[in-house]
Length: 529
Image (cartoon, rainbow, N blue to C red; front, side, top):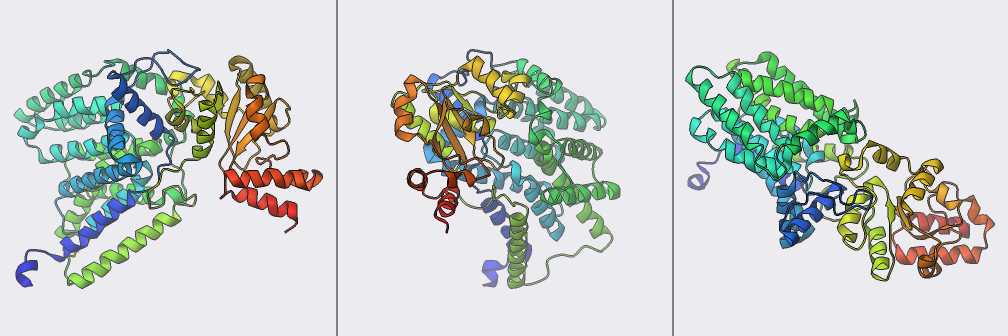
């Protein structure tokens, strides 16, 4: 046994728990709305063998110029999906995250310190919300690769950076500027002959950014996005609030700031990179993963080296059983923390392809195959999945591609529930259907009060209304709900309707959506249970 395990140290066994946790912790249901239009874009590129330069998915901006700067990332994700389905795509993402953290682990020099495990685990929990099946996952991985190469400081590997930059700029467009920034900082603090070489490499990397189907337009896109205030409309571009949900991020941020105070032998370029990425994460939630990738290995190495130098560090001295028990206890602790930090159950462990508009989209697809025609109004959050399920039969009103729609339309899509906004949108686009979230506030009141709009499908997550026009008569006659108002917080109106009529509609609701809690509650309310 000693010969078999002689080369394995307890910290090897202990750290294996970290990577097992990271892999399985990266597997959770696909709930991100934008995943689906990215997949549809990849499908479009594979089918047409061309990168789209005008919009094909929306009737509101049909034919308008579209800067598809994530075309390669979309193509890769769709190719994986086509080979192994949505569950396989989630596993593919988990493998990328595992590789990412293996690179971060290799970047840290003080590998035997328990603090490394703790800081990397905190980094994973801080960035887990951003680990989705979107091109940004490649940005996190490439950021880690750049940090690893720059940390080694070998000129032979620097030659790879311009080629990696071409890959990056086609996978995630303007995000490739992160690579330019990292190399620029490294060159700025270089000395002697190395400085000249690194400046030349940085210039080559910057030039590589323009090797993409959209050329300089991807950077114009980035400028317009922020200058026109789109970042103020979307949650992920807002500052992380001081709440329990973001407590792990703030703990990681504090540790990184402590590591900069003690500094030690941390290179100046890395200190600058940590400070800039920390400022970016404090400005926008979306930047937290990039901060975690840049700062975690720097903080882990700096703090561990400082403690070792002051003889306060401790190495793994327990036997394998104790190390295993300690590792398992940490996993349970972080798992519990993840559960408590996710009160809305959006990022629990497990596979799945659930989406709030999933079944509503299936209903609209079924109707479209039988002659229903748009245009369809959809909520901003539903657009991506509707593109995935309905294109090319139907086009969407709006989705997650903000700049193409303009601030005015995006803002109005957020306030569609106001009668005056709805009248303006309906008058301009002549909607024949509307798919709306079934949320706590009464966002469908303006439709429930109108006789020319009829509810035809609903579940706990979404509602579908058809306009009462000749082309929809058949669908309304077959599926129309004349009594139920499922989005209304007040169900007293049910007592004023004939019980038989209400129960008939509720039974039909439960037939199409057997797991509907709201339909079950409404039925109990009507029956007096």
